Image (cartoon, rainbow, N blue to C red):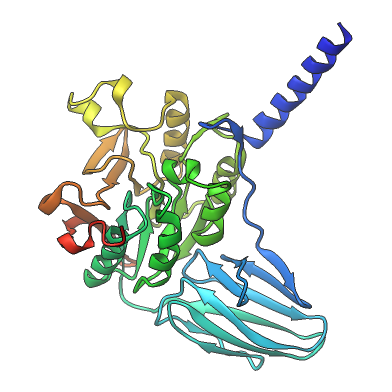
Length: 371
């Protein structure tokens, strides 16, 4: 009897902890911990906003997940060396600092010369223009098709890509994708997909966070907000875990602003093919739990979301989901051949945002090119 009581108590405590932290399934697990943005290496303290230290055996590497990261370096003792900064727009510029030399590129190099007790702030600025353009695509895998999607986005004038997840369809995808993402002509900001969440190997979620970015994040650029939300697996309760915290913090950040808000995620809240009768609710390719979808939709409507971008469905759609404009851009593998499309978005402080599809034009050579 005593053992049953103890077992029940432990189970109850685990359930309470899970509901507070957030439970995810499938597979059943606690919500993954967020990326740590502070680090210390050989006496150099790094405090970052929009970037994090990535493990690398040869170099000191920071990966960014926003267009305009801010990074502070503090030296307890005199520190001299180089830091690589990944996922930077090649034309980005920085506020000058006497202790830093910045050499730009998608992977930029920072030369640091810090006297003992000094600190230096690296503040990057995205290239300025009258308007800004981005591309959206997902479900590409991590090899030739993904590389083409990024190339095509740049050809169409995009300054960055919002990737909707599902990189890891096979054990070869993740290792290949680390090179494809770092060789893209423009920065990539990536949502996690259900295939990435389950993944291959021992720690697929940790691998994603290490090489592609956090599961939930936000940034503001040229007056528009961007919000990345994790829908790779179901979350219980819907408001639990890091996604719930991100939404709560973002609501305070946005306040009463009415500028554009673009949200990108992997799974849509509804399948447009149910509206047209092509699929039943039981066969819908969207969030599994209606309660979770309804809660998220209400949150995004309250935030006055301009559009929700999602993948998961390997087609292109633009539809109204109970008042929430939703665009599906899941043709990263170009399985639909010549009809496959990539989504583009453009906005400026003086004009309403535009969203439209363009042909992906993927050549046959891009398919399975790294098999």
